[in-house]
Image 1: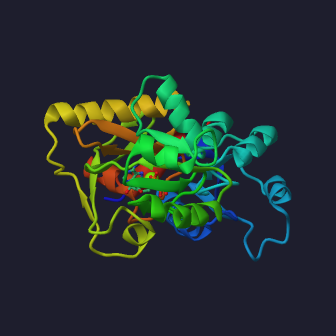
Image 2 (image 1 turned 30 degrees about the vertical axis):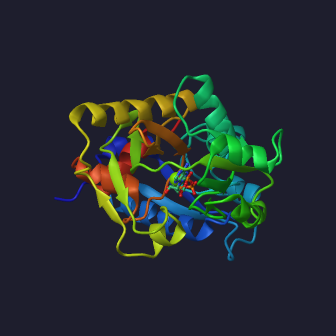
Length: 315
Ligand SMILES: Nc1ncnc2c1ncn2[C@@H]1O[C@H](COP(=O)(O)OP(=O)(O)OP(=O)(O)O)[C@@H](O)[C@H]1O
Ligand SMILES: [Mg+2]
């Protein structure tokens, strides 16, 4: 039986705008997420329609577009700067429209890997040792302190865009040039040699952790969206105790940033098997191949139920 909401819930949601697209480098992913969310909400009986911010057919600039559309709440599914970073959230606050996901401050912090890590450290949560390239330390000092390999990443991107693994001092310059072409803030992080997990969080509670297995050097853009041999495992081999520790850590990491509604926390194990927090995604992918729907499904929550549960948390 497919999942359909009752008339009271439908009335309480009113007319729902699924806002997607945007103009970040993750626009293409957002178009897919947005289409999936819109279809899921409609299948569940929600009166939903789509708004493609910065879309080719949009004849209005984004703020006017939001002002002119009639809607009662918004499901935000833009990825990256301009949509996931607090700016759109701020516009909706000013328009007085409830929206899904984190508020202005948590969205802005979550989009910034450097400030997220600083905040986690301040909250006593584990994250890999790192350096801000071009600040305080010379590149030689960075290599000496972090050791090799390291990973170099733009602070505000997603989908592994602009990231490289650096095995030696000689490889650092090219990695920096790549990352700097996307962002003026670039971080270098100690390479985590252990397993990688992602933990979806729904209304503050962790869903089943997923072990990500790729034969690429790391979970890069190709492994995320192109390769068909990337494995997503729920039989992750962690003891019950470790599984609980991972879920607890994800919930704490989500709460520490002040996130709300839903999101996804990326975690790796270091060489000692300790969990280390990589980042939090405040508007993660929602295509039918994405990780949050996968984790929900594992717990018996269908895609339609998931989008409705997320919509309920709009504030
Ligand atoms: N310190 C690290 N050590 C080893 N691998 C890492 C490290 N940091 C990141 N990676 C690899 O790079 C991938 C992308 O990193 P991260 O999650 O920080 O960025 P992202 O591009 O914003 O991801 P998303 O698409 O989830 O938003 C990770 O999934 C992981 O495979
Ligand atoms: Mg990630």
